Amino acid sequence: MSHLPGAPSPSSSPPPPGWSAPPAPQAVLRSPVRLSQAVMILLGLVIVTDVFAVWQGNHWYQLAGRLMQDFGSVTSREVAAADTLYRASGIMQDAASLATAVLFVVWFHRTRVNAEVFAPDGHEKKRGWTIWGWIVPVVNLWFPRRIALDIWDASADRSSRSTALLNWWWALWIANLLFGRVAGRRYARAEGLEEIRGAVAGLMASDLVDIAAAVLAVFFVLRLTRMQHEKALRGPGPAA
Image 1 (tube, rainbow, N blue to C red):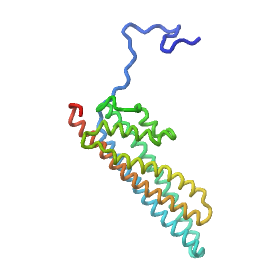
Image 2: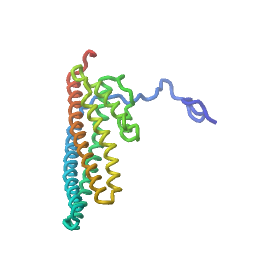
Image 3: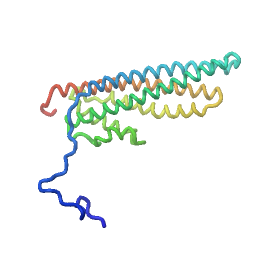
Image 4: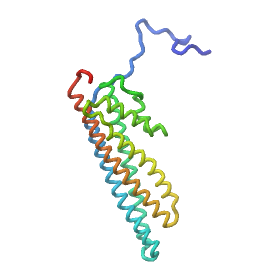
């Protein structure tokens, strides 16, 4: 038979006098500087792998064009080498992106906890969404941005309230997320040379957008980390 939520079950003894539920984990201020440095290094690696992919994609694009004009002008060895290197560049991109994503979320969570110290009541989403917000489908299209805005507002002073950098980074990240998936599926389904060439062009365009998003992500991480570091050094003061 069920009993009321929160009430002790018949088989359990009542809590001792003075007992209370353990408090929720308190926000503790911790420096995000070292994490941010590691994140920016990995973002630089993402940019390098994207540039390599664009270079290999352009080589494959030019090779496909030569095949369309004169099939005998390109050897099978050239085609196999170009395809292998292009696929390898994609694997490198995936590995760099995965490593960056994991460390970025760790840094993001730390800045969110710090922001709770700066502004305990200024957050719309719970702390757990700093992780799950990136994973849950559909929700990941806007939850992380909402959390980032709250972190930014809690960490900023009056001279750094503008969120243009955050908004541009998020817009490019979403554009690359959607455009990259479409381009990747198109490349996987391409059969003829013309389809392959068009799909490669789409992937190169996606890589260029990813480079721009990664560059803005570097500036976003640097700026937010600097705001939190400077605010922590100033110590508690009158609310703005």
